[in-house]
Image 1 (cartoon, rainbow, N blue to C red):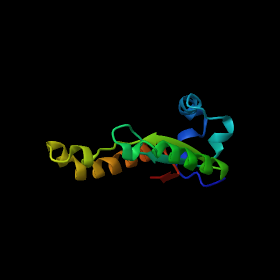
Image 2: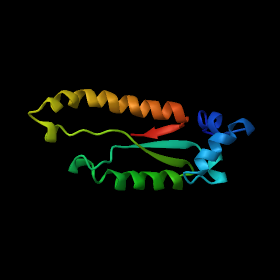
Image 3: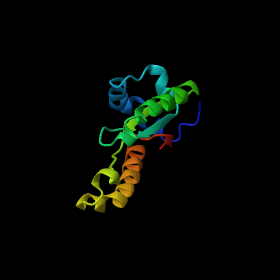
Length: 119
């Protein structure tokens, strides 16, 4: 596939051998380096029952992306529960956490050169 606008800068050429080496450490095969990389942001955690199933969904998304000819890459972001923190100082973080989540996804996608993202 040729839709590698960003990931080609991350993995192509002899000067990116260290990047490829690190990615091999998380399971990349040689053929994966020629595929568009698609980040999959997961809010899975055991902080709240609302998010305990999210990785099951993220794994389905990753498989679907891989089957489409791209390479899916799972990563996590934070989650908070205003249901748990209700009535405490923790409620002050509920709305702010949305910005932190968005910023963390943008940071990972920008840093790691993903060609697409599912969030």
